[in-house]
Length: 151
Image (cartoon, rainbow, N blue to C red):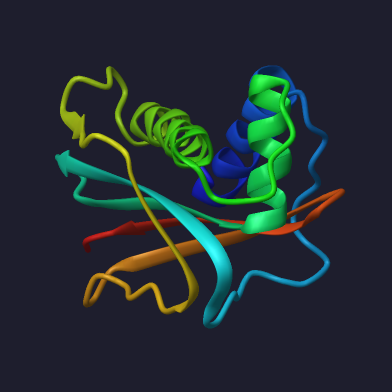
């Protein structure tokens, strides 16, 4: 099983069926995001046979488009609706990661989703973690899905 391909397939499926948004991967911008600017990050923790985090780093303009597609409203600022939508994206991706990493899904638990948003911040990796970062392009910009697993 190639983890990267599984994450790409799951992300594209979630965005086409749940968010009703076309995305493409890998991004033309590559898979490194550096310092996050005007971004919201949704995070899910994984515990059990595999330990780590799944994060989705979404620039504000993309987050507004995702939330608008989810809820049928237009937004131009980070609200609880945007936080909930990005948290739910992380939750769905975390559920897919759990299925990818575990045959029956019962030996990995997921945390509740949380979000962080800011004008400029860094997302630090788990020390010694195996890190997979994939950039996805959509009409409003590029967002990144990151899976870190303790080795």
